[in-house]
Each structure stands twice: as C-alpha cells, then as structure tokens.
Length: 381
Length: 195
Ligand code: FES
Image (cartoon, rainbow over all chains, first blue to last red; front, side, top):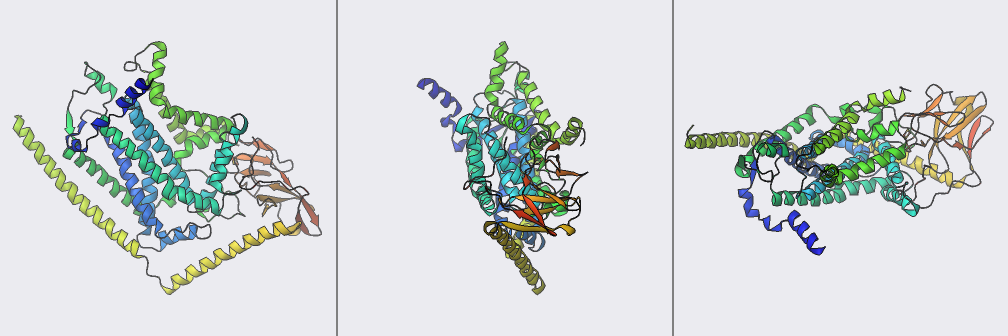
C-alpha cells in the first residue's frame, strides 16, 4: 500500500524535474491548437491586474455600511484616474473568469488532465472555485442594492446547502452561513468578513493554489491534445512534433498577448464603465427599509446556477450543483474510469470528449439562453 | 529554403517582434503609470467638494441614527405605530422592520382593513417588493408571486407562505404589536427558512 502510494505520488510530483535552471530549456509544443496555451497565462496576468488594482482601491475604499457606497462613488467620480482603476478591477475580474473557464474547457477537450497531470487539474479547479468566491465576496463591497440582495440569497443558499445530510451534519451549512454573516442578516459584520475574505484570505489561498499549479506544470511539462498525438500515429505518450523554446520565443509572444490584454482592459475601462450595464436602481445604496428592485440578477458567471433556481425546487438545484462541482474536481478519474466500464481504452474512447462537450454546452446554454428557458418552462408568469 | 536562411529569418522576426512589443509596452505602461500616480496623489479638494462630502457624511450618520432608534424602539415598546391608515394607498405597501428586525410590508386591503406580511421571501430570503403586481406580492429575485390575503405562493419557485405580522388598527393609526412569544433567534444564528 505504502509502496503504491509512494509510486503514485512520485509519478505525480516528480520533484527531481523541478530544476528552475531548466526553464531556459523548457519548450512549448507547436501544433494547430497551440493557441490554447495562452489562456492560462492570460488568466494569471488578470490575477496580477486584480492584485494591483485591488491594492490601489484600498487607498480610498471604506469597508463600513455607512461609507462603502460613498467611498466607491468618490473613487470613480472624484479621484483622478479612479474610474480607470475601479473599472479595470471589474473588467479584468470578468476577463479572468472568462479566460479561466475557457482554459478549463480546452483542458477538458484536449484531455490535458490525464495521468499524471490530475493534480494540476485539481489545483486549477480549486482555483476556479476560489475565484468564484472572490467574485461573490467582492460583489458585496460597494454596498448597493445589487450587492446586498445577492449576498442575502447567496448566504441563504449556503445555509441550506447541507440540509439533505442526516442528523447534525445537516446544520453544517447553517453554521457556515452564520460564519459568513456574523449576525442574523447581512450587516456590518458581514461586510467586514467579506472584506477580509476578498482582500486577504481568498487571495492568499489562490496564490498558494496557483503556485502549486505552476510548479506542477513546470514538473510535467506542457501537455499536447490527445487528438494531435493520435495523429502522430506511433506512441501516444510523447510528442515528436515541432516545439518552440519557451525562452525567448513563447514568452515573447505571450508578452504580446498580455500587453494586448492590459491595453484592451484599460481602454474598455475608460470607454465603457461597467456600471453602464446595470440598471441604476440596482446600484443605489442599500437601505434596510427598501425592497429588492426589479431586474435583480447576479453576475453572468453565476447565471448557470441562477436560472435553475428560478425553475426548480431549491434543494434539487443545490444537490445538482454540489454534485456538479464534485464531479468537476474528480473529472480526471471519472473521465478515464468510465470508459473502462465498457472496456474501452481512455485514449481511444470518445466518451471524455462527448462528456466535455455536454458539460460545456449545458453551462453555456444556461448562461446565454437561461432567461428564454425559464420563460419556456414557467410560461412567463 | 536553406536551413540557415530560415534561421536568419526567424531571428529577424523575433527581433522585429521584440521591438514592437517593447515599444507597445512602453506606451501602455507609461500612460498607466501616469494615471496611477495621479490616482495615488488623490484629488484636489475644492471647497464645494469638501462641502458635498461633509453633507454626505451627515446624511449617512443621520440614517444610521434612524436605524439605531428603530432597533431601540423594537426592544423597548410593545406597540409601534407603522402608518396612518388614511395615508396608505391600496396596492402600494409600506415597508417596516418587525420585532425580529426583519423587513415586513403593510398593505391596505379595504376602507378600514390592513394586512401585514413578512417581506422575507420564503424562497431564498430576498426582500419582496412593497408594490403589488396585479394584486399579488412579488419577489423579483427569482420571480415568485404570493397571495396577499393568505400569503401562499401562487407561482414561482417559492413553496411556503409569507408569514403574517400581528397588527392592530387604533383610530387612524396602524400599529405593529409585540406577540407574547416572539420568534426566538439564537445568538449568531440566522433565521432559517424552513425547507
Ligand atoms: S428569493 Fe424570492 S423568489 Fe427567490
């Protein structure tokens, strides 16, 4: 058993491969899907933009229910360059999630998660969860209608998330929700806690995960899509096609992509402030005596969860999303294990591709056509 | 093409590429740095701006004071005036905070009758709207509709009724009355919606 574990870990964490002098020798495979190799890097850069603009926002942001809303107004309206800084933070967070999701999807399609890179996939998926947590916690900080009601609903979902478990375990979610809220309702304690989560706790966890992710990539080298490897005919294990040096070739191209990203985000921030997309009533400061305004909706990256909540009983949605996240984490094992049920080899089986397309299509459909699906299912109302 | 030519060409393209990239970087980063420097420096506060800021702080503090008064009132009194009957319009409810410090709405149902309901949506806890939609109570968060008289959900994902709040009408004033056994909420525990 120990020997098995040792072997398993050695294959997944080949520490002897971790020689940073070898970064200069690192190479990136060249084939017709090489563009997918930029997505992870762009996500990483977006994270850097988030850290820098986030620190800048801290210069003026005030995390109290009394002043939070006003301090954001102050940043965007009065401080020179404030509009740029805040909108870069918003736009780049959106871009970060988009790139991360695309990155995960291309990894699924190209089967880059396959042994021995399972842990790279797991660290990536956990990072995605943490990033969604960052999106959720950051949403509360402006303390407007949208943010407070989103947090009410979100924490309520958390508090119900374990209600299907037996006995005392059913209260786990309640406990987690009260830990987040710090009181009976969304209030100052919640704001303080979300602020801490958003600027310290989650970024530190993300940093650790991303570091692990990068170290793993350094150890295992860059994966080649299985379809391309199959085209080689011979051994499917190794890439015998063209490669380019990471330094300076790929890095140069990557920097160019990064540069375009920063320029695009900066331009977007000045020309189309994010708030233009949100109805004004949703951005008004939250008042405990008000009610939820019409048109209330979470950010687009939560729509695949939001629309099902409009259509289905909440326990069903909660159970489905929990199993969805669990199976995404376990995807490398599931996708390679399931074909064996009908004695197919993972490398030859079409199943992992179909499963990836099905997941991607379901999430994309709910995100883009969720509203129409709700109307079709519920008949308008 | 001979090998060395390819090699030379690719070197040249790397060089050109580098120059373009470096030029672009300098452009983008110098303008960003300039913006960030002036951001860090902060605004030049004119007297008018300073005044507006103070006004704003005053307004925020006042609303905070209102909220604290409201909480104190809920702890100390057994009956709280909510609204003047003659001033409530049918269809347009009056939002208030109940004894559990949760949002609630008061609706006029007739010449001298009213009904008050908890405004905490039984689906996922949003605050329902105070304006009736086609005579029904509406939660915009996931489109649930509730019956005004019975509180039961009529359509949408909510499955449980909105609780009724105890009120009494005395002359022209509608009061919220404290019940004998108020809903108990343990410390640090959120009021759970039943499943
Ligand atoms: S919270 Fe009211 S419908 Fe979901």
